[in-house]
Image 1 (tube, one colour):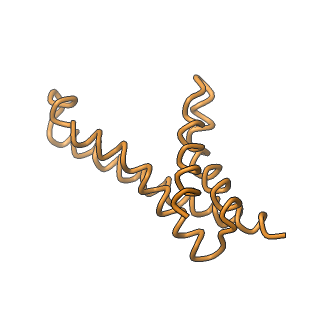
Image 2 (cartoon, rainbow, N blue to C red):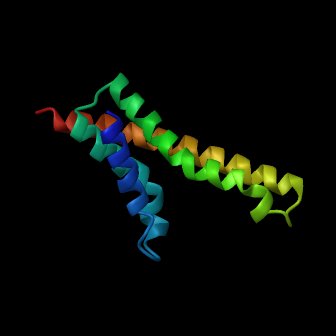
Length: 113
């Protein structure tokens, strides 16, 4: 399951790479990554939820690294603005988890023929 979730995470990250297109493909990346992971793993129900949470946790790693270096990168921002950046990171991870779980559920059902 972890291997499938990591592959889904890599698919989601790859969808952020194309310039200009990443505005469209980036938000859809967790869903497509979840779909790939779900169809590969044959996920359904609780497994799809677990895959979504795993992909969300993998997505959280870059945000945690960013927030850990927050003092170095964002020292010029006010404390309130830094808190807003942290909140935005948490919202992004929650969004990625939800979309990846939804994609895994759909992918798992389409993979079971």
